[in-house]
Amino acid sequence: MKTKLILLYGGKSAEHEVSIQTAFSVINALDLNKFEAIPVYITNEGKWISGPEITGKLAFSEQLRFSPEDTLKLSEKEGEISTGYAVSPAAISEETENTVVFPLLHGPNGEDGTVQGLLEVLDLPYVGNGVLASSSAMDKIVMKKIFADAGIPQLPAVAVRQIDWREFKEEMLTDMEEALVYPMFVKPANLGSSVGISKASNRKELEAAMEEAFLYDRRVVVEQGVVAREIEIAVLGNDTPVCSVPGEILPKGADDSSFYDYKAKYQDNDTTLVIPAEVTDEVLTKLKDFAIQAFLGIDGSGLVRADFFVTEQEDIYLNEVNTMPGFTPVSMYPLLWQASGLPYDKLIEQLVELALERYETKSKLKHSLED
Image 1 (tube, one colour):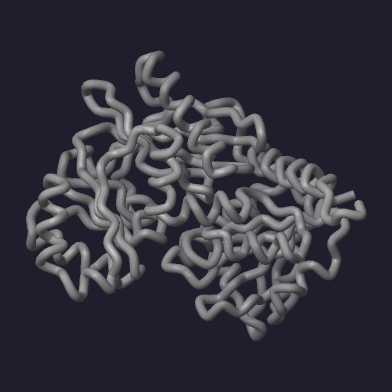
Image 2 (cartoon, rainbow, N blue to C red):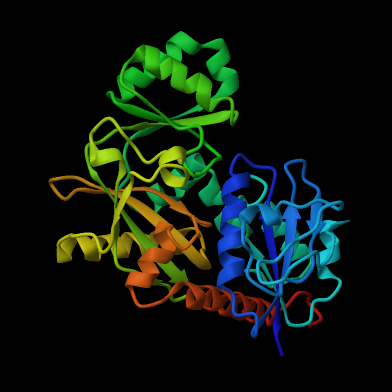
């Protein structure tokens, strides 16, 4: 019997376009002899639109951006096969037997625990992290507190609320300059894919970066910059997770003035990923240990990508973890597993199996005193 795989993508997020790219890649990698693939597109306005079962390869990602009036066309079949139709989010739970949901959503309203909470209420197995891991890892301020409590090394940072910034801007700029040194990186607390992130090398740039970040969130984190390599580790599993080989990001020629921003990740072709990254055995052991600690610290499940800074002196700092990392075939997370012996299509199947494993484990727990 085929597994019905409901693919959620799009969403009310600045990372809407990234999500569509991800869905396109996953759908075309699926073994349709094993899976009944049902696309559910969430528009920028938050409307859920269910498409027909995918029965062949898609030619373009734009085919997944449909509305009730549009049609989904397949590259291996001429003509129109069906129209999408608007659905209530709860409608995806109408047929639950042998069904798994794969949330291919990035950023707020998808990767932050909101959709995961809905799927928990609907009692559906789903790929990836649960409510706690998703929400805590999405919030950079909360995430840093969790990792600090776990004893994982991080760079100094300052959290700023928009209401305080508006009233005490000059005082807060001074406080940041006293707590940190330039360059600093200014980030919205609740966004991924480097959206809204700016580098500041002086007070004028810092003020502009703060204003930019507050366009995306009411809370911002300002982090100490560091001259370091960017090394990433992919984590896979549930209660006994395992790590991939390490990978390194070399953005835009790897000069000190650049960083791996949204454009570099998804639009430019001048970013180099080095897999496996060359690190000493001692550094690799620490990277994997910290990655597992971070995964367990947020109660991770399924997949996490842990991003580190490694200095020339081999000091290691955890930058962040991503509970729904970029997931196209050319994204770091799948490439790390490819280099570790797990190809893209098998990685997807493994994640579905982990989702069912976690669902079965949770289903055995007592839910009332009478059980």
